[in-house]
Length: 200
Image (cartoon, rainbow, N blue to C red; front, side, top):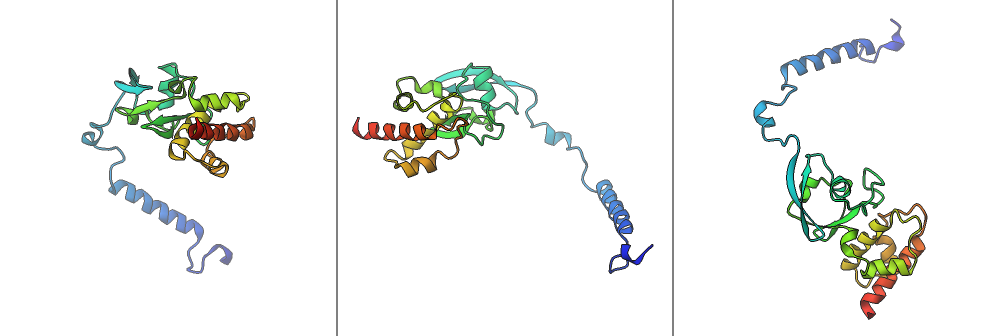
């Protein structure tokens, strides 16, 4: 074996890998079992079960699995399609709903975690809502796919910032994306809602 293949300590890479592999195998055999004991698994939820979700002020019995997202329940069991499955990681804001009045991504929230809490979707706001009206008046939509998420996010934002400035609006809604690029009209709509709240 050439000197270049040996480290300063005199051990070759092949010898090191063989030794570390044997050590790892010994640790796996002697260490903790790879399968959790039955008593630890017994407490886990298996299969599906019926739960009650409170959505837009009404209680709904739904059947969910532990992995079921809130977005899946809203769209496929309750027929509330305002929240959109734009991304699986919630980075675009298209699936924004309110949970106990706070904006969350329904795409990344487990339905099981919403039991006993108030869920509000864009459908629950209604056509006469001041934010909805401002979006319509300012034509703050193009394809409309992102609009429900924006409207819900704006509702939560204005609740915390009723006198928001344009700069605060821009910062507060940077988690919502519009692929059509209608941001100018969205901002105008939010500012109109701010004005309406203060002078309505």
